[in-house]
Length: 272
Length: 299
Image (cartoon, rainbow over all chains, first blue to last red; front, side, top):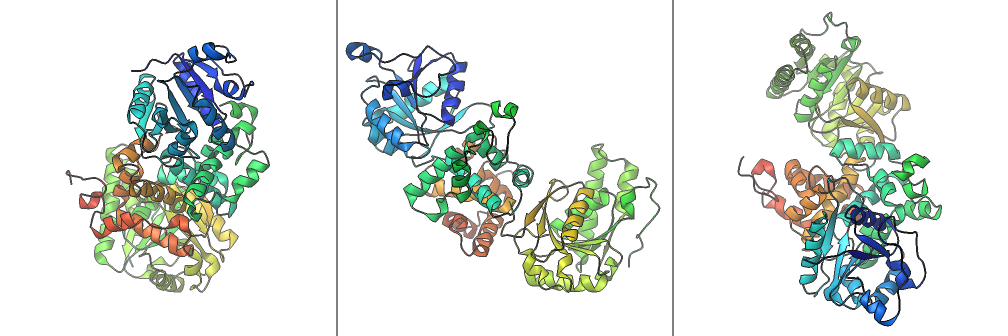
């Protein structure tokens, strides 16, 4: 099994918080891969792990090549593509790239990265299980040793893995985004109030959380990113995002992290 | 007319003065009748089928015994609840009810003919409720003499267990009737939510995505039902989408999707799954047939 004592985290969004939490609990050092690849400090400082380092040049850089890079970007796909194109040369020769497959497939991300055998796509959203869980998919045509190594490493740090076939959104993010999209359409069509839609899904069909409250926890931009990815990839009306997402996002109502999404939050609730 | 109409209640429960009519003694009617009797209502159940009437009374007795056995209800309270419940053949027995809940077969014509008989039997001010999961309440109301008195009241199966009730506001519904339906649902011990009359209301509409999109994943070869169910259950869903379809019945699930699809003038989000249809034709309907997405040997 691969031993990982440090990880480059690249990109911004809800999955950054997911990994910081998972890796922080295991004491794995997290380095700011966004700054490393963009050549400038990016995003906020990670909560735990070693201090940020600017990558050195030449030999020093090769020696410090990370064995594991985790890409979390779903919203800014141009930045994701630009970074993956640069990161192919930065990953250790025997390293792995875990790339979020919420808005593009693992196969597409692997084409940008240029080393498909080293790439594994994953999908995760904040959820209500007893342990963190991710969907995993190997890029089309990639050597299966990559996903096997990813599964072993994730199991060793207490993350449950579920292998699925590769497509945009994998399984859980795709289906949950579609549930949330339907709730959003129902809300904008005035079928019921937000609280009532959420209550209906919790009590009427036992969902662990109402879809609109769940969307606020994930971030509306992140939910829309999955839907846009599906719509762009498959070209079907079935996947078009409810227009209310575009409006709420434009108004800055991104969900809990912004203090306002489908619901308004007090400062205390934002932190949860 | 049956004899047990009103009797002085030892518990002086205020709601025992309230008389509730229920038309249709099928699965839903039975669950609603016991819920109402237990909540203290005097319940007048009506069904033309004698066997169904007997089944309704048997169901109530079985539920009462179970509740006593579990210590949820005293023997006296259970007997009082059963005394408040009576079953009748003719709709005339509904006279004097403050509200009538219709829970007959899910077809607009059938429901309209029932309401014609109910309207002839009750006071014009009586609140009329239709328990439907998939029909347009507006369409049913259009056949009534007093359409403004009709409100949808969607119970979930089993009706005496599931806490949610969707109160469906039709285009013609009087706001006072909607408010009365909300209040009645609360008196029955339920949690009501008000929804505008649109295909699938809230629960059956939003839940379509859980089934339809998961079906696509297996149609596209991205995973087997076991694997997909497991990854949802790991995220906090009580049952994965395929285990849940087996429980509901694939035929019922497919019919609901097909109805919502047709009623939305074929919105692509609701397009039914060919794979699910094939399973229905093949008789793999779920637990009730011993086989659906899974096999059930314990049947």
